[in-house]
Length: 96
Image (cartoon, one colour):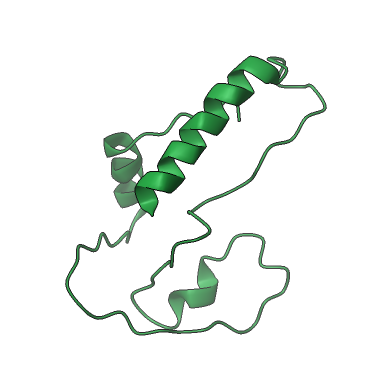
């Protein structure tokens, strides 16, 4: 699912580079995203579930689903962790 999402983002970036204005002040908007919307986001504790919501629209309730099983987890605890992650897995989205 993540590979499919990544491919779609890269295709959108290529299309945007061809079709959208290059002027950053142009009256144009793209899709705003922080994480793949079709994937679950996890938090290390229930208290973190709403703390990191972007554009919450006043949300006061979150659905908490325990995560168990085999897999890899990257826990972002500091701004430096996030910066390291972005350097390790960059994605150009300037045009889109």
